[in-house]
Image (cartoon, rainbow, N blue to C red; front, side, top):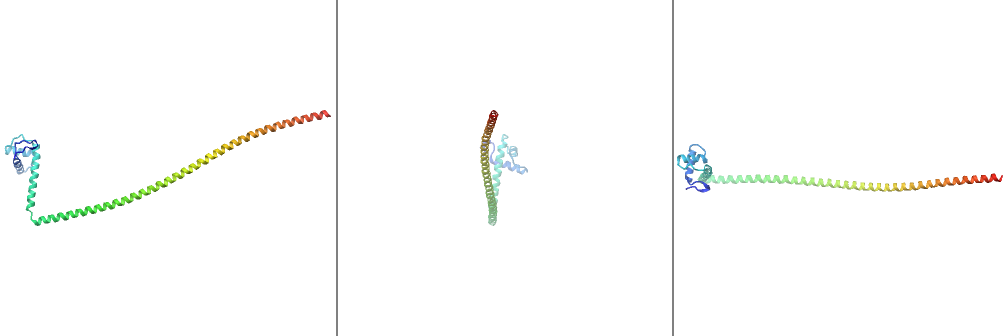
Amino acid sequence: MTIKKNGRPSSYTEGQVLEGIGIVEQDGEIPSGESVKKAMCDQLMVSGGINAQSLDKEVRRLIDERDRMRIDRLVVALPATSKAAADDLGKRLTAAIVEHLADDHNQLQIAAGKKLVEAKADLSCHRAQNRDLQAKLESKDEALAEREAEAHELEQRLASALAEISILKDRISALRRDDDFRAQMLEVMRDAIGDRQLLAE
């Protein structure tokens, strides 16, 4: 069959590629695009214009296909007892894996549940602490408001007291002026009475 896909030249066939792979393997080498190309050109008289990179992909595809076919033939040739044993082993292995996964899943769920409970407890504790702090802040705010109100009241009382003191000082000054006036009048009257007594004598 002539190979024409993926831009590969039609100068070689799949059979020639398989034959080239066989030649390389017989020489104890690992088949690749370069080694199979050399074998095909040297021994199968294929044109040297082959793209080694494209040939390498074809070589790997054909080797994989050949290996699959070989395994399929070996599987078909297996005795029924071997197949049954393999099936039984596969079932037991599957059961063991499933049990292991189930146990791991259960342990993870338990651990996740514990962490969730711990997280909820921590969250509840933090919320309680926040409420306590909020209450303390509110209490401090109330106490501060009370102190500010008391200070304002004291300031008003002080202002009122200072106003009363000022009024009292004014009254005292006025009384002192009145006392001075009275003392002066008494002095004048004494002098007048004394002058009259001297005249009468």
